[in-house]
Image 1 (cartoon, one colour):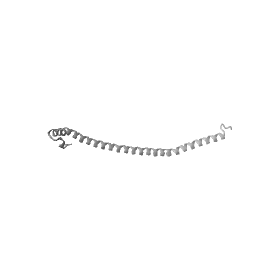
Image 2: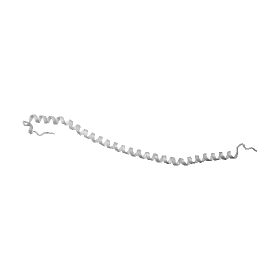
Image 3: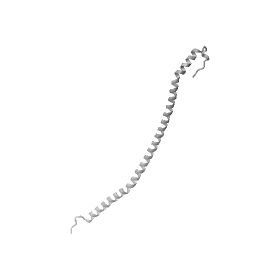
Length: 108
């Protein structure tokens, strides 16, 4: 009987297949570790983003409070400007009517 494949070639083929399977097994075993590292990395990034969002929300609240204070101040100043012509007119009349302008007390 004549062998088309020598036993030595069959052994070499089995060794190569065994080596390939060992490499595949290592890769399969590494997958959970790799997935865990990625998950941890994503959690860190998520935590950092949430902190940044909280910081920006705090700044937004501060800005809104500042805008509210400025609006209130604007309203007070607008009221003052509305009454300013009347006060100015009264002051001019007093100055005209007062014979001693240096003794007149200012209204403002």
